[in-house]
Length: 360
Image 1 (cartoon, rainbow, N blue to C red):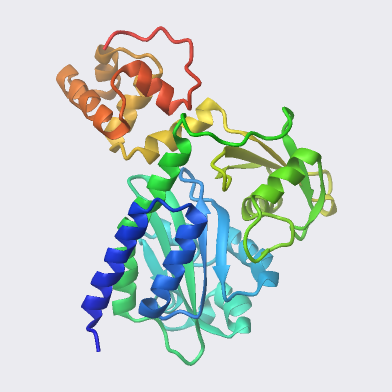
Image 2 (cartoon, rainbow, N blue to C red; image 1 turned 120 degrees about the vertical axis):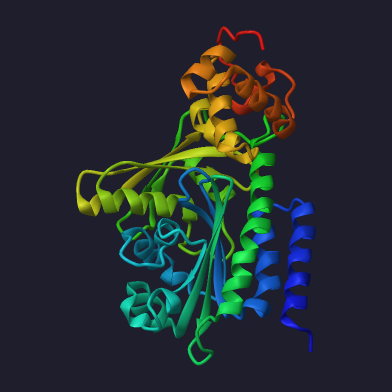
């Protein structure tokens, strides 16, 4: 029988091979699910693509779960009243957490456990945030049936070791989709795509552009019939707060969109979701994160995009000019750019602004 460390070494090696294959995100998730089910010991689970800036779930690949429960799962996630929501795990300084450990072995203390997991026959859940280099590249949740016992320390340690290789693979997929030379499919109409969801997250109406977009973003399993995860979660966020909400999503064919959700007049009227291509300003933080710049390099790059001179960047960031030049020199290696103008083009998705760029 193979020792656990040998199994873990093989798992991590296979993840490296999957990352090198540059699979689409949904396909990568399916491969990872099959690879990890044995070593982590789960019976059902779901993987989420996220907005790298906010961590907001925008896509889902699920297996072994009841699709009828997905809207309830979204509601519980966004309520923020549980120690094992993805945001609560992140806020507590963890990358990995299980309901058993978060509740000191008393899962009944968890609202998510009481209302969702226990009624479905699950006794514990393991959750992971694939955060890396300041970006929030994805998340996953793995459910274990009653009778199999809670997740133990070796499984939690393996889960923690997955964060960097999986996060790296997801970041690479995002970087490829953000490349301005990549050919993507545009929305079929110049006007924004508009859909209306009812209070239960079901599609009430949509224009032609939205129907086409929803078809392009269809997810295996049809978690909520006719509604992609990104539409549902941003609509539920707007309905919960009573205020507009926004999230960036990447379609399966590589187009980055902004989804804007706003509640309609009355509680029973639902939520309107408007999809439009991301603006250069919305694209900028995505590109900065996807190219793996350090926090200081990100600050320098953002000032460079604004047309700020090296001397002024040094003054604004309280650095010496040589230090700024050192950061500027590191950015081309990570972004593949040679000049400041190329950097602006890359980070602004080809929307080169009419800035009076100073010489380097």
